[in-house]
Image (tube, rainbow over all chains, first blue to last red; front, side, top):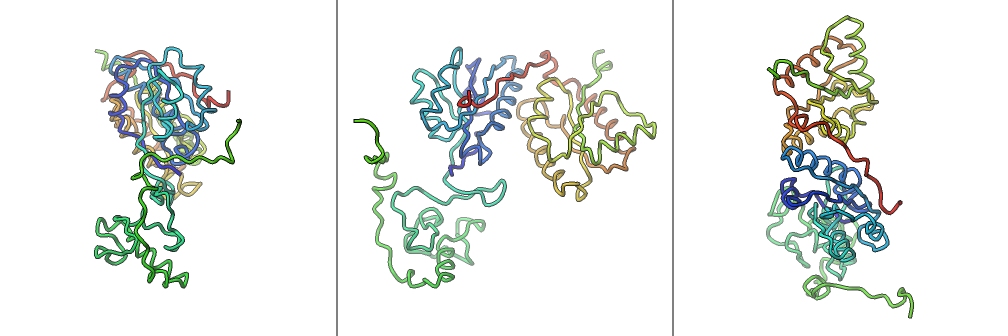
Length: 224
Length: 154
């Protein structure tokens, strides 16, 4: 899922400095699961903002709404009926959610309350770790199901490099060496032969380097 | 002087298995503690939602404390440890928004510690008296909008 975390309160306050009434909009999917932008976080942030503004003598009115998904029109559209008198929407969605609201609600200022971090998973309650970099051309079949793009600091396709020591990456003792993980995994699978096969240079045009990406599935499109 | 007559409003979220029973014991022992402390019984401090604390301050509480079981003695094993982390986080938030982190505290006690309950109530009330009214209570009591919900559900 997409992992995000709340921006510092001071930064959010600054964004809302000229607003009197805002909709604080949460999202019911990824950011709810990673405790960054669900219904509860909406309540907490709105409460903190109201109190902070009250203390500055500039009360802020908040309307709290949590959409099932901010990234789909059908869930964004019901919000249109509640925009009367709203100076801005403070979105606790990921970067996709913020942009979906902006795109679907012309003339409405949509502000991000979160920093969208990465695609990953929770290792335990309160700890999240990156797993996929969305490179657009998956090589997990060659690397024992551990991604060299997301897990190796250098995104090496034929690692490890000389910075790998005792299973850790040279950037930090807290970061596992991605290629050590791959080696250990392939060894446990009895597939160390895959380490012998050089992985050819990657075509990065499938990744962000190729510009904004888009998928069209003709079999799924509707209408004429 | 207003400071001399200031009677703080304090909300104490008390776990039913320990602090709430300790309050009961304090009563049975005829111990005196300030009437400023308004007790809210909760099934475990682990059940304490951060929003309850924020709402208490928003509605004009001058101080809030959370009283749970002694560490290692939670009826639900680690509810009080989880609450401690939430309190620590909220103290930071309260500091940041200008209410002051010292207006929130976490205490631990067992059901047998009636005198400790009274001591904590006295100690915390004295602390809040010293700090004075919540900066928010100067700006009248606050309305908390009942406008939370899921837009798509409507």
